[in-house]
Image 1: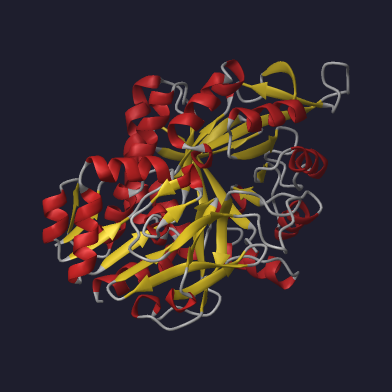
Image 2: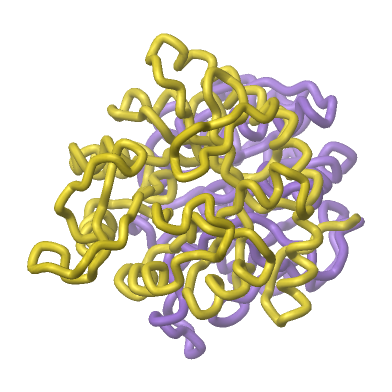
Length: 205
Length: 260
């Protein structure tokens, strides 16, 4: 069974509806034990890093996720779930899960940044360029666009853990991963057929 | 670079699709869920549902529509009309919408924008405004006045100032609907759209007057809009989303193309 981690962070029902549409059974759970037992884990979320981490810790879901990662359970992070798998987020100066080395940083620091042209949050459809092949990014077409809503982005310490980038005043990572963990900054559940494809790829991973 | 978004607006009354022309004599033209799915498959980027149900007794029907849309349509959508409290907003978000669209209720009670933004995040709060062109005056220096009740009640509020205030209160996007252009199919109100897009730093969605693909091109370039709202162009089958996007792409705009 696929378990969607419930930590009061938004888009759970959207993800569940997308999985239902694909004919994939899943359960939403806030219970660390069912996360530990899950065959696969989806770790979605919208909201702020600080509050998200606080809820994860209160529910004991932080250690459940770390254990599941360590024992090889396939995990898909979405949006906030792509940010707080790193060690630290600039949002709320939050200490995060640290499944991957690196940090989540705010838009607007790069040399190509023009605040008159580029708005924060980065909200809308943007093209995703695959930088190294990954099973979860299979069957995507060059130029496929995905839906984003975020002000921060993930920056793994090891560039080898970056699988796709987008461009918004400079390139930034939008798909990162290591071993049994993969995470996307875009909302795969709201990105039309291309987004559903990523979810389907995860099911078959 | 973000793509320019094409958004369609579906007016829903008692669970049925309607299209208002100059905000009078609305005429039912179908099932909103079926239409939403059709446009999604054509490659539409986003949807807006306005509940124009007159009686609050029938609000539950709208939540059913929202929930059925969310099960079949995997692009973002917002819901507006009749949302007066944070609790109203919460209900449509729970039913599956990404965003709420507040209009008249926010003019009467600007605190609604702030409360909803605090509760759900700015990205979930769209401030929609109906705007009428008037002679410039000390209280309406831009010559664009906010109106409510489908254009019947003038509020003595300058649209540019209201847009700035809405952003300060926490709106994450603005829909700028020109009452003068709405239903004419003669093109968007470019000056109004540009003035608001220059006044705020959140995305601006132009609404009212779209009748041909070149109207969208004009408002997405000269009008400086981030997105354009269309209704009858699609609802009456005059154009497909693909045809509109092909036109815009052909003129050099970045739009999201889906596999066909």
